Image (tube, rainbow over all chains, first blue to last red; front, side):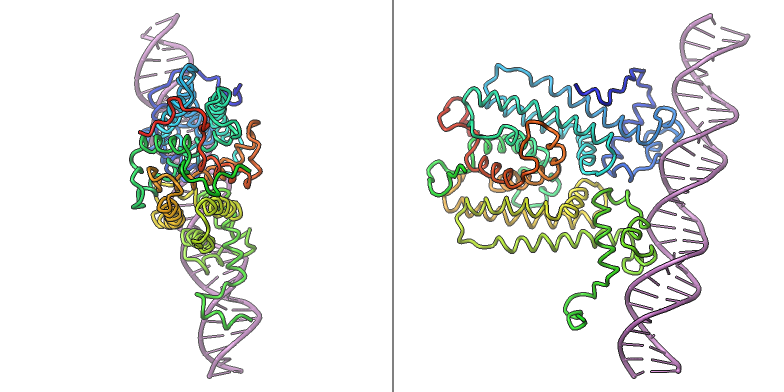
Length: 220
Length: 220
DNA sequence: ATCTAAGCTGACCGGTCGGTCGGTCAGCTT
DNA sequence: AAGCTGACCGACCGACCGGTCAGCTTAGAT
């Protein structure tokens, strides 16, 4: 499994330590790794800078610790979506809305994850980011495969490509939320539930009108 | 040489100046604003650090200049997609594939744009990023509205939401490309054309099998 | 009452940061 | 040949960076 960066540390949280992680998560997500100094984090957490080094070996180690906290959060969400009794369309709807809700709930650490996926170096943290995303992705592919096997959805679609679109729709919403809210046409920028419902609807039914049968039904 | 044309445009490019912008674009996209020092840029461009300050007032000004270059590139793409004679489905296909190709072609500056949309402060650069994205977005909404007016696509879908999904699909592909290539199920990670075609297909036709008519066709 | 160890701190280090300065030089004008 | 200008440079600045360290405080076990 994904025991790549399993920090075998199971000590007491320590009041100061949690404050450090919490503050660091906020600052890192706002300004990025290089945009935050250890002094900033110390001030935000209400501790001394040296104290951070008492709990974490380096700035990089603190960063990875923050990302690890996010990984644990995501893993918890995935457990809830294991029931196979629910019909496909409902499972898809639940996944999309739960996924988006999770992103928005942990927006700080998720923004960190996105930022990490954009950077070129820093293998360790990137591997962690890949790990979190990958696990989420595999889960969705399984749901889609079940749907195909049951004959509910078209079998000529690549389930991995479908999963990419579903996940991407949520990720993009989160990422572009502020920009979207500036565009007059967009009325769903502050209504994630409506966005999730609407996007799932489009994915399931398709954009094309059922009446129209012109040069649209190309299937390669 | 091209002294006569110098008056038409703003200023002469200057060999060193273009080298600075080019190098800065690469470095900024790789490591972010704070991850790059002016010395790095100077070395990459083969000029002195003081020379950069001869051409640009500050590091921030250089950053904005790099983003502005990207804005100009995007504007050029949008001009090509103005023909209204093409039927809707074909226009949609063209937009998606052209949009994705443009992202990949100018991956460096586009990565900058994404990074900027993730940052919290820095109003000036963010406004620019919003501007570029917004313009692209409005164009796509118009295409979709035309499709609705012509009755080719369903009128009960929010065109702005559809546009978000189409653009988001491409953005997410770019962003997650490296992660996707690590996932065994994903076979399209290095085939953007196939991804664009496949995603458009799903958007147009929908995931659901036309035969299946169980509890799926919910329309809110 | 004493020991111990973790939690925590202010002062400090070498190095790098963005930015400035005085000055050189090639080329153009007059 | 004098005058001017934009491109360019090496040396330098104060501020701030990540990280270290000796020592203080506190809480629990003995």
